[in-house]
Image 1 (cartoon, rainbow, N blue to C red):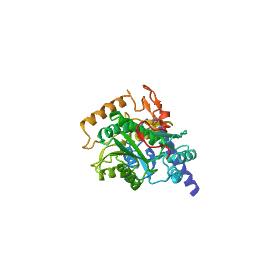
Image 2 (image 1 turned 90 degrees about the vertical axis):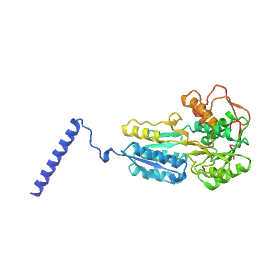
Image 3 (image 1 turned 135 degrees about the vertical axis):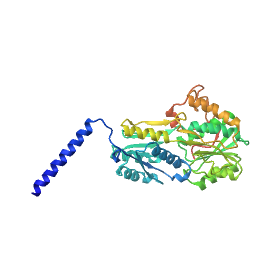
Image 4 (image 1 turned 45 degrees about the vertical axis):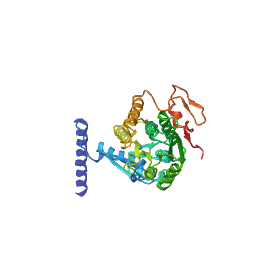
Length: 367
């Protein structure tokens, strides 16, 4: 009796499942939303969103992603050291994340290694250059925003010496320094940009100390390429001006910050996750521009004049329209050698491997 009852229950279950499948195939109706419609997206951060810098900008975009696409569920791991990245990426993949964004250059090789083990997961690595069938890279043309902030700094300086607190002598940072300097000297050919390396991404004390050293040397405007507001605060404490980076740093040094070169990753995150969900994503190396809204400027401080704003808008219009870009010749290096001929524009490949300073930079690539 028990055996017959079990077979009957099984038969009814099979008939019910078959009917449901047939109904699903034939009616053309949209399936109801449930957990199967969700897509899980993981994020690996080198710092904390509280840094007011690099990680903060990525996390703001993550929140925008969740708001724009209700079917997205995100998982975040903060303060991940390069040496621990492979373990964290593996855990995120094992947790069922369909897409994983690794947001630091040092995560490049770990991302490639883990991607080989999880071919059905899409990995996106920020600022790197290695790709695979399920790995893409992404970055932004921050040099465009850097150039515009250089215009403001060049018009604001009275000493004609601008300090630049720099992280590491890698192409990304060198490119930013050069673009900034070109912007400075486009409006003030006598100005110099003095570089101090800290070999840090996030060390408020060291970065503030470097800014003070530059102020001691006579700089009256401070720019930076790190994740903390230390250099901005040093400028404010000394009654000088500054240019922020990553996010709007004016709240942390309102009397000093004229503007900041900022990231807006939200458009890229939203479009990428949509493409993965729709099955149209393909591996690529994305380098988003100011025209695409990936990079830009934070609101101006009250010390920025109408003349400065007009100069920035004129240059911005040429960049956004595609009429002109920052690394268009003639451009000379520190030694006076012509590196980019008049009318020529550097290729992306050459910009991405930049290892020399433009005329007007005080400092060395080799430390």
